[in-house]
Image (cartoon, rainbow, N blue to C red):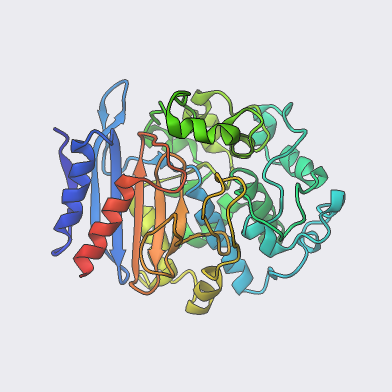
Length: 393
């Protein structure tokens, strides 16, 4: 039986019980969960294995690649710049990014990019870009400049699974003078003492857990006879919208091993390759809704703006489901019933999540290495978060 390490504050013992139950059901290989309440850490748990091949244990300082949970980090950066007046929501993105207006994108606004309404979910003619080119940033930016929207921006929304990071990241770079990874280190990680990176240094590579993919994993194989998979087949076909969006129109991510590579983790893909531990995710979101050791990342007014729902109707990429967005953040909906009405954050493929509730002043972070099917969370994280609410009464 896997032993759970770490601690919980008095009253939060039920979170440890829920964490243990995830392992007892066989849902986990290795994982960590942390929570902050009113700016103070109240849960810090970890357990299991970090490497399936060697059975190396998940340590207190084990890191994990968190896929789209990275988008929340990028969104916090953009929302800071909006609050400072460096970005204006209604302004054309081309105002900050000359060249972006090509191919009918002159009316695409900053708000469209942040809320997945730009119609740029993938790049049509980028399949021949090598992994080296993609990880080098500029080639993708140039391809996005030439890409035409697949619908009139602002008329619908579709999940920009990979392109979100380059689109919003380029706005961050052009307005702050720093890459998203550099911005995150200077404005979030260093002031808060976080083990969190977009662009992992070589010195930290040995700490990263190896992802375990399989049926339903983001790089694994789906069972074609599964009834649910049959229903989703049009989206998951080679030319399906979800398949194309998850890869961004790029073929270089087709090899499952690439997501466990040092080369990929060292690059900056601000939609998909953040690396961190659970306590840093929780602390990051805690500093958005509370003061944490004297640091507050977003004001109450900025939070109000960030969690205002900008999208309506079904998401045209995420299986036409009710997944709604504010300014870069996933919001509570009929699909994501988590926390109180103004709760916000982001899930990552496989199950990771960073999430906060500004009204409860609760923030959580969850990392794992056993990939599950969910793009918007799964039972593991939901039970852990709900156990935190049970502790709050």
